Image (cartoon, rainbow, N blue to C red; front, top):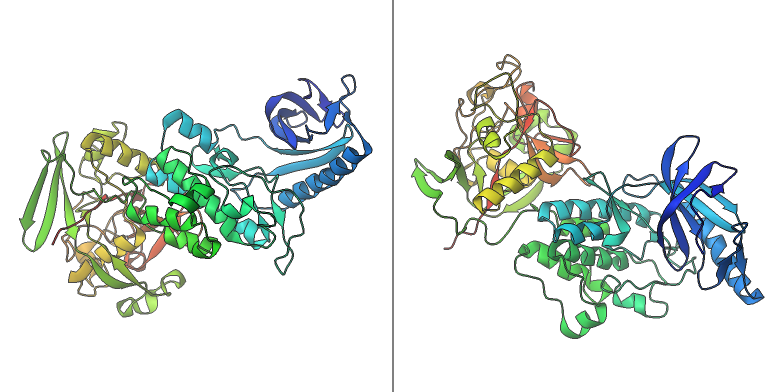
Length: 531
């Protein structure tokens, strides 16, 4: 029996409003914290197999002494787990405000997230766009990385246990079957392992299958969750994968498909062994797709050869914009010799990067193109060839999705690696400090010549690939996460930047929801070039 609406707890500090859900070990309510007049979620420990409720007092009643011993043991663990979660400080893990005992049972009070679970989101709209799905997956991965460092396995990762705070933040909930481990990796928790079919790896079906700390168990479930978000379908059960293997739909980008296959490998040793390793598997442009660049929508596409550069010209609602072909190659990313003493600390870890063929916008997206798709940008200036600015990363994703709907293509943001490779001139690079020159005035609008405002695109000299304004004028959003945080990378410097900030290796970052008059975007398009 559930608590009735208007039931008070803690002397009126909390008031029950309605039931949100019920499982085998507890009931979750929507409540009101009266003193602060804020909505909260209240979870009550209630083992429905053993517990009843006294109607007049709300007290939880038990049956035999044997059941009392079982319930008491799990009630104590319920409290300890709540205390553990309450000590966590991560934006992608549910926050616990209060823990108390009352009515012969225990409660904890959590933040109330008035948003859908990922499972509910998929029920409403079907499979998610790759960029959106990977954003939620990476945020969940960061939550897992945090709890793994504390020697805790969640053991029930699935779309219904990931809520959305707003539209962009994924929050991991329900630690009801999590296990804690001591320093040598031995289990210190005795909670029975739950089985979420399609999301639980084979070891969770076995006695003692999670008796040692292994992040790969949660990573399997994370991979299965990624499968669900990208296909809209519940993953096959682990036993079926053992017998028949795993089939990934061919519309999923190959590297993402490979990542899912590795995460959902039946053998634990074949999966990524840490969240860091998992993140490296999906460290790619979310919109990558094997068919991009070979679109059936050919009526609005022209391939041009101009000087030494190959261009893709695309007509969108009468607006022609060009994309430069960036040939595959390998380069050293970061503070190479031409950057000298000006490099910042986040540039100094050089790494060799392989880049595949892709197209990149000749210029940043202009106000004219943005308005043709979005129709909502307001400015005192009527200059349509100014770069669009004051947009967040989320705004960019919205624009790209709408553009793709109009064109039938798979435009995207470039990865940070792609951006730097292109800014350096790709395999035609002459080793310049800025994009196209060692003289910043030749190629960039910056704090020394911009008069503190943006300028129309393509007025300065292009770089070796025919790309304009990759140094200065407007900072450009990239698809990549900055390091392993939740911020997105920004590159290129802007009209307010010093020359040092406009170098091709210089890095910046900000929140996905941040917008500023110095930030815009440049489109990328993944291609396969047949030889």
